[in-house]
Image: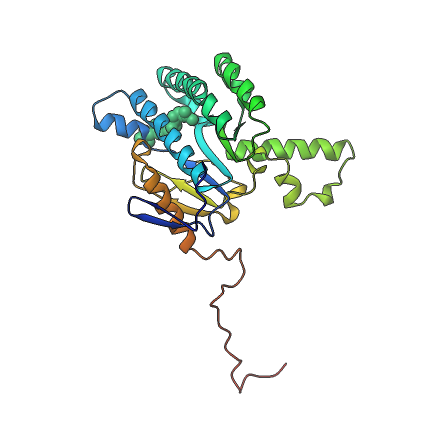
Length: 265
Ligand code: FPP
């Protein structure tokens, strides 16, 4: 059952349900360090990271937030050692198999963005049916960014536009920011309102670059496997305290009259 009261109280965080972000993006960083701190293999950190994904998807859904995009594997992550990459791919398969029922039961639509053609066949074999079986769900959209890169997504949208110009479907001078936006799968659920990065680093690492234009950024020192529903609420509460101005002036801006001796023009 969805909780939609005027406020949600979980441990010591009270969250106003008014003014929630519609779309949250998460850069899930810190799995490797979490494992290394315990003398464990990095793959153990990824497995704990997978449990954190489950926890945060549930918490996001409970709040009634419509879209969550998680950075599960970047286009650049293929450069990691082969053993780590294959552990991550197996974890992804396990996650998709184990979450299938819950996604279907709770009305979550599963999407994937990125260069999906690079994923191993065994991942596609569970990912593709789950995408189509959940396609009509509308409580929340969970997007997995897989083999994803923000620059690559912009380049693909630009190629698409170039083809449309060549075929005469659109004129070059009709290319607007929106013409690019509609060609970006990551923004089909709207721009991210809030992007959270865990793991203590303060950078964007090629995530949702185009959509980030006016996103609020929250950085958490927690390593991803330790990130809890409480931490999510804390990040959302920080978002709610921000004033989003989109380049305009704020609500509290004041305008002083020009001084009397200002030269008239
Ligand atoms: C970055 O941490 C994390 C990743 C590259 C993978 C994220 C994967 C998961 C959270 C689990 C699998 C995903 C799903 C959707 C089931 P890092 O390894 O770079 O950490 P470090 O900076 O501490 O080394």
